[in-house]
Image (cartoon, rainbow, N blue to C red):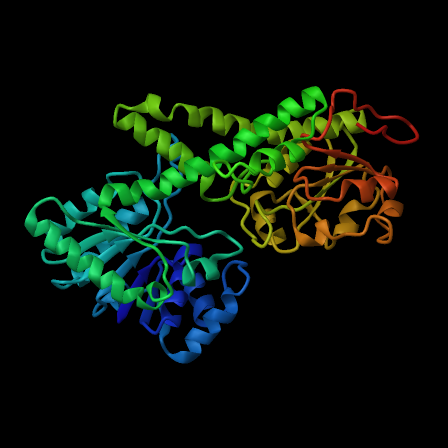
Length: 458
């Protein structure tokens, strides 16, 4: 099948390559000429394990190409819209400028029977608005919504072996229902290889499909903030949040996933999506229904300040103190620094007068674009040299697997104190190697002080 993908950022580029690997003839279209040239050359514009190999393989097959020309979409039967929906500057609402522009650019190229398929995360009601517009400017074309559930670091697998396919289609009147059934059947053809493996297929109305993505992200954010709220209680009482999470996670109704207490969530999805969800609820007159997401957001942001406060306690004051921050991306296996908790910590440390050196295996260049004043180290050891406290802010395997006894790291630092802001280190091993380990939610931090010969355990 001939397919176009409008928007070749993280979502669109992976989707385009994934659809080509399923045997379709795919063109990816983006307004960013530099990005398109990189993709044409087989170079990923972002770090994602396995993506560059998939990209080059599909370019070589002849089934995948990229263009900046919207007319390249002409002749495709299915058109996926995968552009960004960032947070608006003046509010928490989603900015739909790119989505509307993508559909407007597609409209003159659409033929009767063509299907526009939204993949972007949008406020509920957006699909209906776009469909109404298409009825005027491209009569005979249709629209469906097929939300994505990609996890950065696992995007290729999530595209080719998803845990479910959600198809939002038209319905209501007999005529609309018939069109919706036709659209669902067309998407079944697109995803035939995936569906043949038994992947669950859920067909629903447009509004519900839009809500699936935003509701899922809101639930995950709530779960993360819940365990971080428990982390605050654990620190106040001396309890251990990791053991707490293990215990409650055995309850099948709760589950252990996303109960990792630490620095909190970030990235280009969860923070903006919960704010946009709240803003949309306010627009609909049901703001009270999602009022709790304000506290979810507040708990999450509070974690960042808390880590900086701990560093200040450990050093006896941050002015002029050397701090190493290991990890700058919002999560491991990604170079994405959008709303990165790690970068927020770096910025606050610097604002309080600390001398900060940061390191990340993949996200260094992107971090410098956000914080040009960042002192970027080439290795974790360079970052830690002469540091008075080390903060592990992103749980890369490079940091998790570091041998605190044999690595020589202790000999490089000025003071062997580490804040495990992701609860990813072997605390016993680090303590045995002579480090003072402060792990979030694992004991009281109220008595943390600095001494001339080292920092007593918290």
